[in-house]
Image 1 (spheres, rainbow, N blue to C red):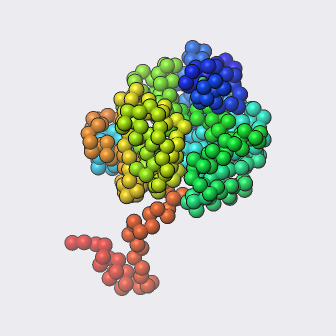
Image 2 (image 1 turned 135 degrees about the vertical axis):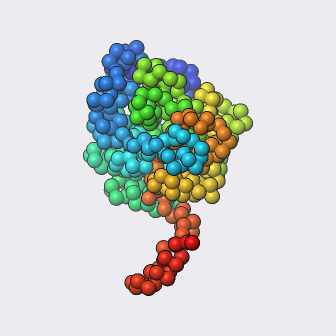
Image 3 (image 1 turned 135 degrees about the horizontal axis):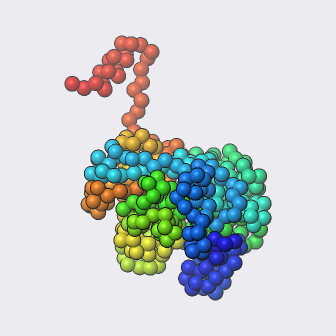
Length: 412
Ligand SMILES: *Cc1c(COP(=O)(O)O)cnc(C)c1O
Ligand SMILES: [Zn+2]
């Protein structure tokens, strides 16, 4: 496997072979995939990528998979020039990377699961599993179904109805655990040790997390092969955020972009902000919290990649901010009203934080700023109840229409 050197511990650097393992035996640090960039440089090119499949697999030279078999249509989502929202925020070059329309389950998780389960198949696993805040369970359930794998997904019992139905429809075993995500994750780690399953975000996590780099690769290609000046992305475990950074750095390393990687701005919900708190207090360790927020998809109280996300914010000259429940809902409505995109609570958090940073003046008005919209609003509709206007109710009569609708909506 020429492009991959192996796995290495992020803490002590000890090296491991390419196997379904995720922690260092010596220091318990997380393992990460290490590439041979000199080797990759010889074969990778913009032209080769542009001729590749219209999916995240066009970047296979920088992914830890030899033979993709799962999630063949994941990725390749639109990058939208957000003129209206940009005007509102005083930004001339604002873009939305819209993973709310990812295939097949409408969140960025389709990227990481495509990579994780393709790798799991290479390893010979026949059962897929995950510990999830909702979107991951949807994606693992769908992609296990389409690739003929058995499937167990573990979720907190209090998830949004549509996220539960969005897993059940694919007919996996859905285990709803009494507890929060961190309880689900702890239980899942114990199960992963005992059963020979591919837990995408536990024992195959080093491969899973690499899928998030494609959020950087696609944006760079869509901008005409350059890095934006700044990006805003949500933080749950911190994995996505750190891998967007790794992705831009890799593109520079192999010569596909010339400018520097972006400043990385991170978004957390006020009711679950352990990474933000560590960053603001100058800590490189995470104080776990008990989540209490409507942004359930990013409610991880003990985030595995938190310390690395703090490092990325510092190294990239970025920053972090939080959004309250009210601000998250306003964020959802603002993106919908200005750009016609319906995102879920995680996206509402990102837009709320984008707005705060824009108001603080951290972006130059001409800079290229990309906001990552990672999930779809049709999955978390209940949070908007009581926050939207009601339909105008009429009898099927032209006169009622004129009185009640025209009378109320046409002004002046
Ligand atoms: C899982 C998720 C994230 C963030 O995931 P990380 O654990 O930080 O990689 C962001 N947005 C949505 C919608 C998600 O489902
Ligand atoms: Zn180690």
